[in-house]
Image 1: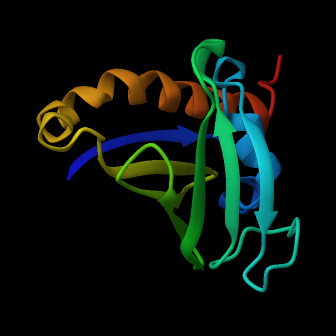
Image 2: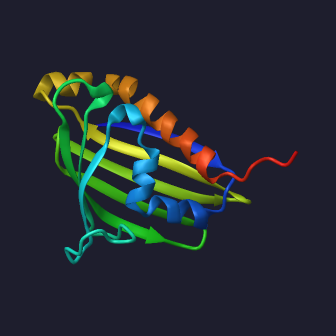
Length: 164
């Protein structure tokens, strides 16, 4: 499998960053408009609809239509691990159904003084078998703008405004 990783430091406490990333609303706010995200269903670990926090066992069904072109791409992801410690936290989601044969995204958060370091690590396999495997490392071209946007947007939404 191929992998992609990107980190950013946010001038906000770990607790704020963790809370924001623990909800469906956080995902929606971190997805660029050009992806045309549509969250279709969210279920908690006990199949309860619309949980307040995405705990391990939560499932999310969504679709995107990048740049409004082509048919909607649907996927189902499941939070398979979620853990919070004193100075760090993480959750891992996997794609159960969707455009990638394999997709595993680990969202890690580390306290860093008054701020937080966010690290996204994605392990993936592109479709198309051997051709997809050969092109796997090139997928960074598509992932980089998405994760740059997510990290920039997190800074906009969660960092305190600078003092005059």
